[in-house]
Length: 438
Ligand code: XUL
Ligand code: CO
Image 1: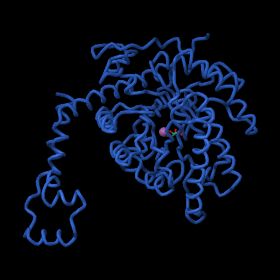
Image 2: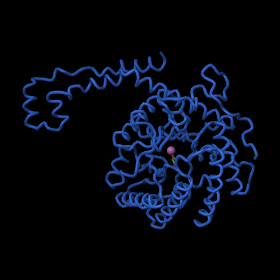
Image 3: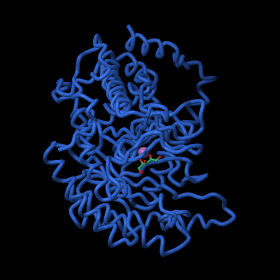
């Protein structure tokens, strides 16, 4: 079989003293952590759309990297692309991948022919999965790229578009099930609005919930036993995306009775676009019982859009992995690199280097997160901070047995509150630095 990445070697763990750019410094796939190899704890996934498809175009220029894989015929190209994808995953020790339907097989003029192409390519991908021992983390449908979706898919004002989206998602779930995927993502591509002057928000939200219900129930009926994920994002492409942030999505799935089936896929850059930290979004998901999977990337604090950079900020990866540990680790989810190199980083080696840096940053972040837990000072401080709820009036409040009259009587007897203690943020931040760099 043709080798697509001759300049990329089999990347191995060499430790932090290594100066070899094509080696892992922290990620040691087979190292046991808490009784499981790191590769099973972190469950890294390659995003097909960025890595295999996107040519690094931007608003001002065409692509800077060629992703035609030596073919002009679209189906031949799709097969070569699949060969290249598995070669790359293999060389980088990435066990999982994620795709949109249109990433793996080009859309045709009719839905029937698009579906036939998907059948053909997914057969081929299934063979490659066996050969290379790779797994599908999640599948999804691209219901945002084609002009038919210009005003949304499930939230489109045109019922024909709703029907088309439902059929497209039905097929994407079938392909996900066929390839053994344990996750199916709904990112609300253009599910949002540009102006309320032309928008019936209630109808759109009710329709969106109905689309999720219909398609997720269909998935269950054909044996999908994994998790459905909604991926929040506040804006881009639409001015206002309905799945704004984790809290909004949790409210939405609870309102429409979808919370038993749906969890969240939290993306770092989407969190910061919503003016939240990555850790905030993960915490909101966890406390709502909706922590599912992660799109690992990072934004740029100086830019107001989704830059989808490979994550290298270890402070962020450490706090992310702390939340993953608190959530009990990944079950069906994992860490999908929804990330791309910068436009001038336009070689295959740059792509490999970007994954190495991202995987190392998460492996290091995971190690730091485990140290934070083992150190125990931060958790202990938080426990102490709320200790007034472990006895007396506090316990009654926590047990929900306190009455309003009792609270009033108690408050009247206090004179004033003199028991507040410091939040010690700086002390905690210092502990974090000592754990990270000490
Ligand atoms: C877009 C985005 C998507 C989803 C899958 O910002 O994150 O790639 O992850 O549709
Ligand atoms: Co994403």
